[in-house]
Length: 269
Image (cartoon, rainbow, N blue to C red; front, side, top):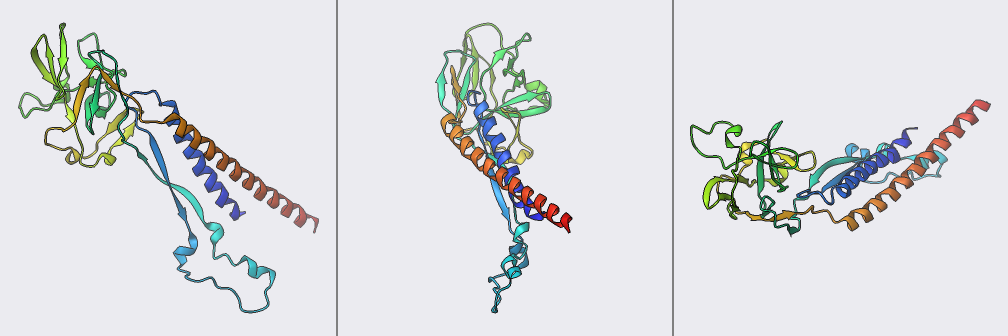
């Protein structure tokens, strides 16, 4: 039955929303995580055909006249796309000198196995080579300098030596009062052009999207930015979505039951 596609498309869309909400809730305690939203689009066949008015027959109605739907049964719901909410998360003090939080719209630039990526997660540690790395092992990069000696991201990996470390709001790293590097803090013209990779990394596909002027964002040493997920709100939305999903499942079962009875009745003839 082609009518089955209407509730089925709705169920598929609601399942996608459940998955998105569940992922948000699972990362409620992930530093720097930004929650995702889905947007839905309803496809209406009648709009494609250009019908402006309801065409009701001016006559004595027959049963088939009640089913003049203009292919409305071919309407369906689909996920139009997903987008990330980049709202600032809460900044929590940790007193760890390698914990860094960004106040503003900036991102840390890091080097992952897949290339340069951007993150808001500022839980950094020092690996065996002395490099500043994220909890996933991605290396923190220094500010890009217009120098012939700096050609590759690997040339910008920040390495620190033992000593008292102080990081200024502008990202300058001082060890025992000696400037050794400056953290690359990047801002974007269109932040929504970024695409997620995993739960804490973002990809920028257009280099022209990077703002060339010095970042207005500031780095806070000894702080960490929490996820911007509100667990209570997300759980409430998850329960409401699951109820919608169950209603659509019941509708699908009803259509399936009607189809089964129709086949059985025809078989009697």
